[in-house]
Length: 409
Image (cartoon, rainbow, N blue to C red):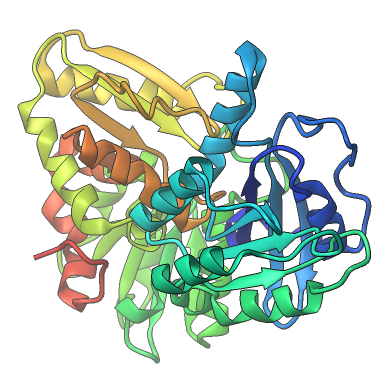
């Protein structure tokens, strides 16, 4: 349970003003002293994450945040950290003291979650000292926001809050989009091309490859895992041909030459553009590459924070392909982890990794920011396929299956 990747966990964010009992509530929900509790306002500075098992949901990630009403220069930095958690929250829990009205701080949180289509649960904490105002309850009913009443110190109302959480789990968490099994017949074989390069962890495969193999096994399909230099020989020995070949995007150039046009071909990264993001928007973003010109500004964003090495895909390989495509120099900015310029991207294109380590909510939030700024966004695999001239072939297996996210026409 502790080793379950964050991308598989339901993200529950706890938000509110200072001293309303957010950290005490997290401790009560997790039955552990996860967050430091103090009567002093502003005790929680950075977001505190606690992975745990919440039955019958399974693995979840609780995130305690600093007060949204923090003050001063440091307080503003804490608020920005808190706001960044909004982008990956799948259920937003807004905490207030029991007798407090809905202030502008809570209303801003409600608006932020509504804009992201994130379920909201309102918690009136410290009911041992006061009770909610009737006008506040009426306001929440009008907004159709469920609420719970708790005393985090004694544990009163925590079971009720659990029940409300269970009723508001997003459908796409309970039934996440598949990676590839819906693209092939039920009795078929797929070939997974997995180059072992300098970035491959010694003794392990990277997460997208592991997830694809596990999904194939769970669906009782067959798969052959090969390195790119073995692919041609393996395809000659397989009969009948595989229903699909999936490659690491970095090997697209070689693999596309080795795989006959009669065999569908795509990449792990493109499959994750469907599962973790919105494939239609990402496809349109890739098409924007044709509008780039010398001097265009490009943001390359990666969810992992590993130190880039020689021939790194994000810092070396993709910039090289784009320069060759445009025929000159481009301006690149690289962002890693949860770092993202949400207010001033100031670029002509965003190219994102597959986001295998994240939940889908954070990718959808980044897409929303880009759309609001009228900036096209795509991902590594789609960008590589476009620059290599194999774009239509690379997306065809998903388009033909007519099973993709919301924006493809």
